[in-house]
Image (cartoon, rainbow, N blue to C red; front, side, top):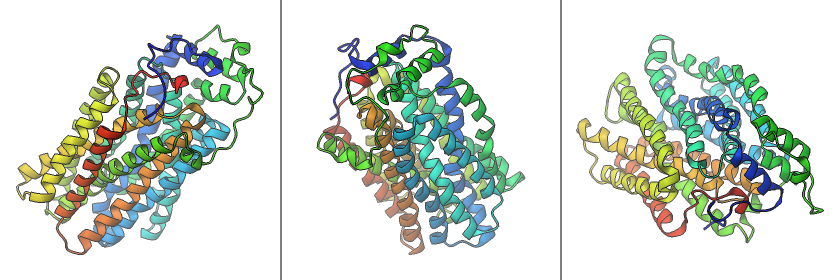
Length: 457
């Protein structure tokens, strides 16, 4: 579906961006090979934490504030609605002003709002705060992913990004595990408050990480690109070699998201956006609603429900690094196809049979949850490798925005189904159909992107 060539076929490329890519591939310093995915991954761990914390405080909020299923669903959707806006807005701004400035602002914004959420007096205030915080949460993720993919070595980009992604998504597990201790002993407000920790880490990010050299050279800033490469450890960086002979080189133009539907990108964008919608509707729906479904539908005690969710999070901590280790050798598509297939089988089984025995129910739920997460993990590098540098942040922003849109819709749909008294089997059935839709697209409408040079797209 996407253009480009394997790294073995394109050794050097041509032009300033190819020169940057060759330089990045040659750097072996820890400043490039180790620090960025670890440091940014830890910052973004709290992006995931802030995003999912509402799911684990919801059983407590429902009891304390007397929330109906619809009100609970609306409160969950509020954060995702903000993320929908933030992903598009901040992704576009990152093309105009750079990856790092937009990322830093969004993390400060996210951390301050975490404190405000912890101090919220009631439902209405929390609803508004979650929308505002969601803008930063939704924008920080695609911008950081764009940055990581643009500095990653071509041959091991999947593993490099996988390390970052594993730490980032560990925020879901961290929030899950922490909820079993924090909420009973400190109260639900502290689960929100811990989301402000990245504010303490940002000075280190500013000190160690420069702007993306690929973005700088695309913007006509050859001197700054050379400085960024030198900061990563490439002593031979020559600004003259990074200057374009084309008269169009200059400040990056402001690109609207509609650029992705130009004839050049239309087909790949349609497929990628559908993959994001189907995968996110199921994965975020399961993550955000499972604790409440366990409690309200199957009458499982809150503490036990949180332990079941923590079990899935623990298994994810094994799944994610395993995928990171094999994604460059196995490829993106086989992992996504396998995960979507298992998720389809598990979730449709729940939809058609809905076992009452917890010993059967919980393993099927966890299998569906982890398998659909596999597709989510693969989608990030696949999307980054599908678009060229000048639209990459916009593409990842729109993808993330669509994911948040699906996530906004999920709580409303599930809340309405539960409020109507209909069987929760319908919910699982809908998630299973989404997994099936993603499976069909992966099989019929995608091509492998592993080991592709970004400057060859």
